[in-house]
Image (cartoon, rainbow, N blue to C red; front, side, top):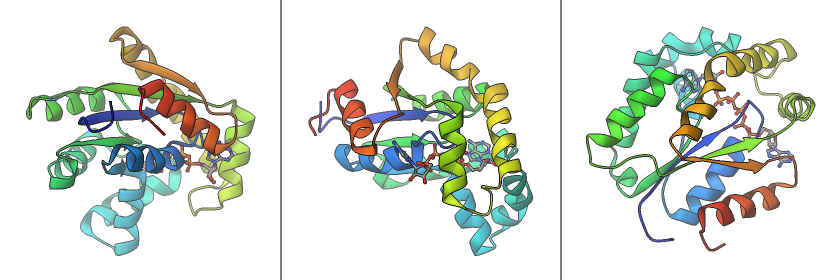
Length: 190
Ligand code: AP5
């Protein structure tokens, strides 16, 4: 199905490899990887008004509010490079965000094509996140991000399963193997 427009959501706990895989998948599909975590971190580094608003929230591992995220994602998906699709990493993270994403896509006559759930056991998630040593990767913040994920984002698994969009992939293996499994699931030639 390479060549067709694709709108793929990557779902998974913090440290499951969404960022790592989104870049690879986006490149295979010829669409942009849209990482809300990276966009927010870039805004904080650049000291933009958005960055000033969300800096403290990122530092604690809590979620930025849905209205702010809607603005960020709506603006990003309106850019020309996202016309043919995108790989979303880190959005949606709440049921309200999932509904907003549907509304944004429906406004241009498209919809989410697939949701890849990257599954990794919790001890491995913590090991990976601690190994990365970003400013918001301290043990305490990682713990908060995991709790926030379980409470707010994990319910989306059932939401997308019911819609027939969920495709689970074992993320507890080497990066190229996970990438190949995602492509195979989506029936994209490597
Ligand atoms: P975000 O950056 O999205 O944080 P996250 O979901 O916690 O994701 P991570 O970046 O920690 O993990 P990942 O799954 O992308 O894994 P990665 O590929 O990096 O968001 C940060 C913050 O922004 C949030 O806490 C929140 O405050 C805010 N935010 C963002 N989006 C928001 C939204 N929609 N709503 C509200 N707030 C929002 O991999 C992790 C490490 O493991 C790397 O070192 C990598 O090299 C390694 N690794 C990856 N795959 C493998 C593998 N297969 N084997 C071994 N190592 C691997």
